[in-house]
Image (cartoon, rainbow, N blue to C red; front, side, top):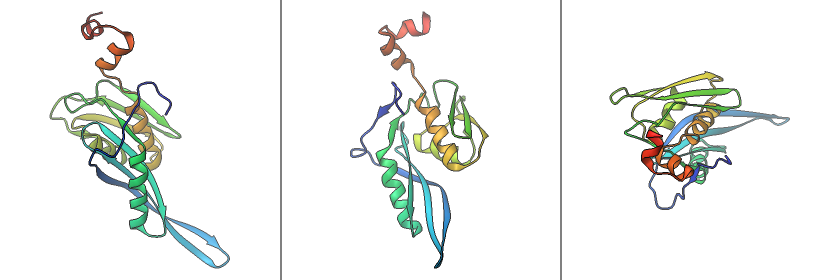
Length: 172
């Protein structure tokens, strides 16, 4: 996450919508029998370019989800969204999961699988084409999608980095 163009966001001044991506029942076998607990991966976002994900683990489902939401609010990033889509094509990787995202024209909708769809809905992206390759593990797919979105750069950011006018980015 040590990327130059990642903009961290404080969660205090924004209201979020949370989406449960996946919940697993985890079993720990001890000499006294089986102990069940739950792990939940949650994506939160304000549907206007801010998104974060979190993992919560607890004995009950509701407290696992609540912990996941709290964790997600601690890991927020700002994503450039242009006219309801992303600025350019990008790939993202995490562990065995690899995702490819591509901008789409207005009216296309979100063409993406389950875990990726939750991230795009939370960011506020309305039109996008996406493909998940490799692992379909929801944890890895969410992290790979967030990684791809973190690598996104809009024209304003590039102009600022180069120290030039916005028009020279497109014309030069």
